[in-house]
Amino acid sequence: MASFSWHDGEDKVKILSVSGEIEESDYDLRAAVSGLTQLHSSIIDLSGVTAAKGFFFEMLQEAASMTRLKVVTQVPEVSEICLQFAIVPFPTVRSAELSHRGDETVAQLLTSLRDVPSLTKDAQALVDYTTSKDADFEGVEKLLTSQPAIVSQIMRIANSAYYYRRQSVDTLPLALSTIGMSYLTRIFQFNLFNGFVSLFKPQHDFFNGCILCAELSVFIARAVGFDAVDISKVWIGGLLHDLGEMGMAFYFPEKYVASKHFAQTSPAPQTMAEFIYFGINHQTLGQLMAVRWNFPQYLVEIIGNHHKNDLMKKNLVIPILCADAYITSRKGGIGPSWDLMIKNIFKLYNCKIPWEKPQTEFETIISMKPLPLINGN
View 1 (cartoon, rainbow, N blue to C red):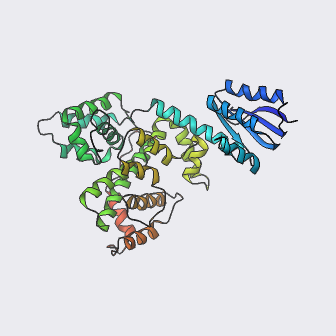
View 2 (cartoon, rainbow, N blue to C red; view 1 turned 90 degrees about the horizontal axis):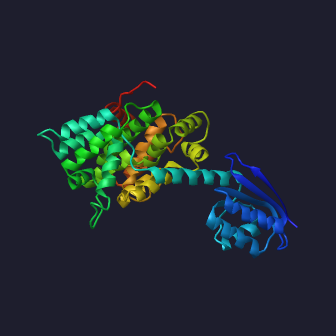
View 3 (tube, helix red, strand yellow; view 1 turned 135 degrees about the vertical axis):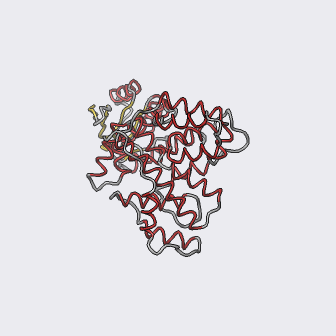
């Protein structure tokens, strides 16, 4: 006969711990498993189970279809049966709790997420420009070079069902011409009335990092020999590569600040801190957002893969990988070696590094693009 007990996890998720050999006559356990369906989310810990038959996993499968249920086990035989019933087991209770936390983050964000608003002063400048008699798309594009939030809105709208035809809109100039000046003004007016008056320092630092990454990515792409169209894609990829972190910073500001503090005061990388506080990393979350907003496929891949150090084949994410690694390094963060990446990139494209001291060149680019801190926090 099996024994079981209830207790609360770190996030107040109910955990049902089971041990021993589960038999069909364990009616109390059957009732307990049935009770899981009454909970919003739960964990059943089978780490102490020595044997169980198919009927029990049928019950778990049914319960998992009705509520958010995570199963924990490290017993190979039990794990194998779980997979046969399309139940993915977690190795520890903590990993199951983090998975629940990730489910909650995604559910909250994708349910309420529309756009990340911008600063009202930036929106005002855009409204003033687009309503002037000399306004043109080139001028709008110049004003948007430091506006990742508004650029993400424009790309979402240009690729929405209202505008979408046979192929995706994959560059900012194309998105601007697709939407048109009149509707662009309405977008900027929306930001004017619904935006932020000021930014907190972590949000300011985030926006600044996006802008620096875009500029540095383009600098590297030009040096390697990318054509104009690909450079335009690299720029928007660099600006929006941390889309998931943008969602974290503006929809969960307290958790975001706590995760940044944890990453800065411990040897854990940023992605580990995100798992602890959000249950998901910003690449995966950003990829979900990009797919939901119908972003072009290249942009979805950049957002989801910009921390994967794959320099074996030519693609648009390579300059962004290096730029992001350099910016992370100069902030004292943990990441891949940017200088080694530079060597590998130019070797991949079979060209010579044009700079005697890449770091000096990079710092020159970065020094041209810092954002002022709005409110001093």
